[in-house]
Structures are given as structure tokens and as C-alpha cells.
Image (cartoon, rainbow, N blue to C red; front, side, top):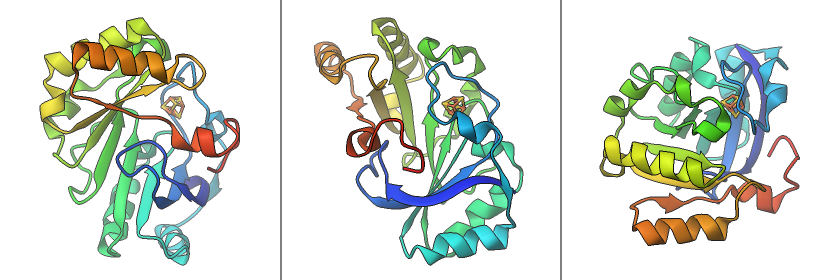
Length: 211
Ligand code: SF4
């Protein structure tokens, strides 16, 4: 498999936020979001076997592992890797960009799916059929870059009744909108969504990689 980096950090963007976690960042992405902060993952790669990845993840002795990217579901071998990590008794999170079918992902894993808003310039890539395959334990994340993004996200949540399917996060795009503004809009509309801050951006320098 093509692996960009493996590292331990604090999980920062879900209900698992704050927990120590091993991150496996796979190489390659089919999208080009306007605010992407992991462009180095488009092509930086080292070849690793599934055995080598599992061994390295276990060496951290943490219970939580997140497979991210880039877009991790682009590599077919990731499906076997997810099952193998689950077999090890680990809690496995899959951070995916919402454009790839999740139907074949091991149901023991937790999907954390970005729903790309217009501000990302990638909202047309949404594979909406994924909403039918969500489990209660999965999570959706909308990164909000503007009031227009907020209105769009609110409409999508309402149209697909997403707040009744799983946890829905609205996350202010770092440095683009104020968390206080997004909080006020959510309260005003009484939305059943969670405000989610990118915790790692506050702990570490916002441009630092490997966190
Ligand atoms: S999906 Fe993620 S990695 Fe890919 S371009 Fe968008 S932000 Fe970057």
C-alpha cells in the first residue's frame, strides 16, 4: 500500500476528539479542496505491506487508530487492513471525503465522513447513496467556510434527515469563520448538530504536519 505517514497524536475532529490515536495517512486523493491542509498526501508515499502497517500501529500500544488521507478508500487493500486492525481489538476510524462508496467497509469500523460544502469547491462530488449505508455509530462532518455553506449544510441535513441517522458535526473552517458565529447560527436554528472544533489546530501550530 502507499503510505504517506504513520504517527500518534490527539484525535481532533469527531466525538473521539481528545483521545490518543494512531493515524495512518494513506497517499493519494481524488479531490482538490480549496482549504486542503494535507496536500503533501497527494503523492508522498512509501510502499508498506499490510503486515508492516499493522505491526507499526500496534507498536504504539494505543486502542484507537484512524485511517485517513488523502482519501483512504481509494486503495482497495484498505478494506482488508481495516478488518485486520479490528481483529486486533482496536477501535478503527475511517476518515473519508464522501465521494467513495463505503458499502464494503467492515461494519465494525466507524466512518467519519466529510460532506464537502460548496466552499470546498468539491460539493458536486458527494456520493449521496452513502447516506443509506450509515450506521448509528458513524459520524458526518460539514466543514463550514461561510454563512452560505452553513445554509447549504442545513438543507442537506434536513433533506436526508441526517441528524436521525448518526452524529452530525458542523466544523468552522479554521481562520475562515469564527466558531462564535457558527455557534450562534446553530442555536438560532435549533439544529441537532454538534459544533466541532479542529482541536489539533489549537494544540499545535495550525500548519504543522504529522498531528
Ligand atoms: S479530501 Fe481531504 S485530502 Fe483530499 S483534497 Fe480534500 S481536504 Fe485535501
